[in-house]
Image (cartoon, rainbow, N blue to C red; front, side):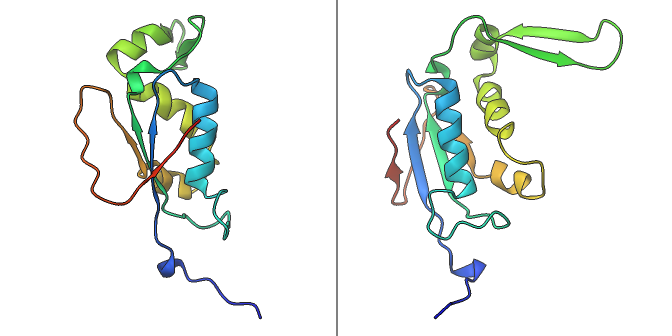
Length: 137
C-alpha cells in the first residue's frame, strides 16, 4: 500500500504574489511556508520541494516606520543602525530577504531555498512564461 517517493518525480510550482500594501510579517510567513513545502501534500522536512516564488512591487510593502535594521560588527563602535525607510529606497530586496531567511532553519537546504526566491521592484520588467499560481494574502 505504501509507495516510496522519488525526488526526481516532483515538479515545481511557480507562485506569483503582488506585494503592494501587504504587511511584511504576514507576507514573509506565507512565502516561507510555500518555499519549505508545508502546503504540499508530500511534505518532508529534509527535501527541497523546488517551489518557486516571484514577488512583484517589493518597494511598496507596508510596515510601521519605527522599525530599524541593526548590524553589529563585533568591534567597539561597530553598531550600524539603518531605518527601514532608508533601506526601502536604496535596497528593498534586503528587507524581504532578511525577514524570509530569518524564518528558515539554518541547514544545507537554506542555500537551495534561497535560490527559489525572485524579487522584483516595479521598475524591473518581469516575463513569466510558465503556468503560475497567483497568490492572495
